[in-house]
View 1 (cartoon, helix red, strand yellow):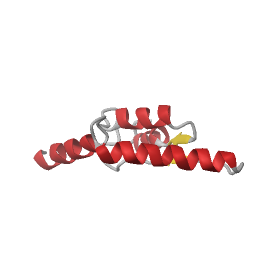
View 2 (view 1 turned 45 degrees about the vertical axis):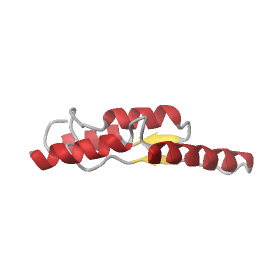
View 3 (view 1 turned 60 degrees about the vertical axis):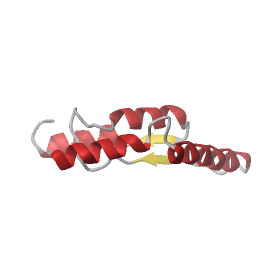
View 4 (view 1 turned 60 degrees about the horizontal axis):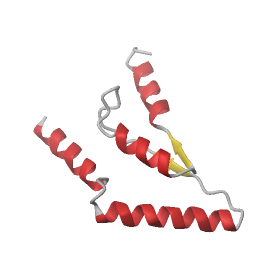
Length: 92
């Protein structure tokens, strides 16, 4: 359980507003999207969940929501993955 909490905290810290890498990655993604749009090349960003606690308490849902909202070219796969996990566990 302690390792899980440490893992959650680590991943959460990567996407805080103060995280330099997230800011740089965000800018780079926007540049890629703008460049591809200017050349009329479709650009799609597929948001994949971390395979960890894929239930209603998924600890990184907020990160997915922020990325999906910010990146118009994003496809959020979390809901589909959560449905599939629930089906396999007999809950859906």
